[in-house]
Length: 264
Image (cartoon, rainbow, N blue to C red; front, side, top):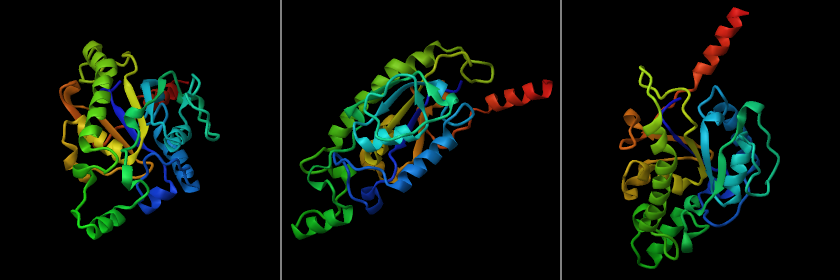
């Protein structure tokens, strides 16, 4: 089993994500294309021989917004427990995608509160600010939103969540797991991966805070609708959080199956 990871998944495409309107508290469904793409993402990335291995998940955080919950449904992860919301549609996964992980709906990963800028595009916001004689180079990472959240408020709630993940799931896994000669965590270690299904701005901020960066430096981190990112640690150390630019699939399962076939 690899070093504990956090998989961050942005909800699938909506009409507002298509045209760049800031979508915080507004409830919008996924588009038909958004649903198709999330099903395809689940088939490509979730499974015993894929990037996200269901049996390795220990906890799943999902935003209170319906678009994030529907996105989780479409990934094909099959919870053995009841979902903490009423299903927004039909979505089934293969038997090997069943999970025992607890699923938690939390405001900690709700989208950035856009306040007065809810439903507006960045271009329109800057044009309006220009007309009012305000600073035109508005930047959410630096300036926040009037009537909504500041970068400091977003940072505070994300830091609390990250600290909780490390205290409850990753810290114990890294301190207790036995390390094999190759430098990987012992295969019999308990599940320790975490899945977070939420929104664009909040997940970009989450990634920045994961590695201790000020979110004012954040415009260079991009996560498109339906996108998947991976966060982990360098050298199996809780003190060295990192963004994993490329994650290997769990090919040990595939190789084991191939060897068994040869013996038959």
